[in-house]
Amino acid sequence: MDRLAPGSLTGRMTQHPILITGGTGKSGARVVSLLEKKGVPVRVGSRSSEPRFDWTDRDTWDVVFDGVKTVYIVPCDGEQLTRPFIHRAEDLGVERIVLLSGRGVDTPGYAGENSIAGKTHIDGEDAVHNCRLEWTIIRPAWFAQNFSEGFFLEAVLGGELRLPAGDGAASFVDAEDIAAVAVAALTEDGHTGQTYELSGPTAVTIGEAVAEISEAIGRPVRYVSVPNDEFVAELVAQGWTAADAEDYADAVGPIRRDMDSHLSDGVQRALGRPARDFREFVKTAAASGAWKA
Image 1 (cartoon, rainbow, N blue to C red):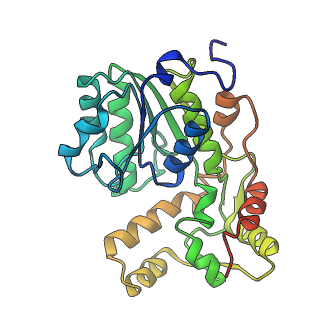
Image 2 (cartoon, rainbow, N blue to C red; image 1 turned 180 degrees about the vertical axis):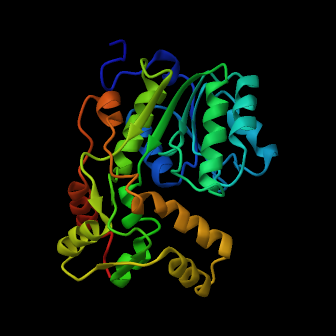
């Protein structure tokens, strides 16, 4: 295998800053942290960074590419901007990109026809496959951190998570593993042309997931399966737009249809070690105070 030994970096990666778009998000912030620990220069791409980067303001693109040879791309959901961003990267001398995509991009029936994230990922992957750069694609399953930092946190803290997920299971992947794979692809040789499907080593139902959290934090958290239409109506009543509510329900749909329970070997392939288990994530998150009332 021509990938460098763990921890070793290609020479060019130590000389130029690596641009991390979405550098303050769940995966991006972890990528930044890991790169900094390796002593690799990093440029955080966000609206609050200096220089400022805003996906929807193309006037901010060129300045963040200055001196950059490698980029981690966290797409802007709902926008078809990955393709022009990659084209601009090619024009300005970038040599390597790592794209954060999503599970199900090439699976018929996984995402609905109107899925915002689905359209973004499909177009983004097509742009990557047709670019002139060294590339790696990362396709994670549902982030385990959605329970501690994302979509599900408020409901978990409230003691009841209502979703149209039925009894379906998902092989939640720890964002720490996503970041570790991204860093390997950004800084080591041997990952070019690879598409890494990432998941945890086991699949759990939403009910099993919240039961693990409940046990870890010592207070009840329950899962309530609700019909899709009822879920959308509840979100709209809370102030969501109908389009956003339907998109959220659509994102959960693959769990209900048992399309998210399969296991993927991307973490093992990229890092040479097993993926972290959901139970390990829960213990770590609970110990860090993620679910303190």
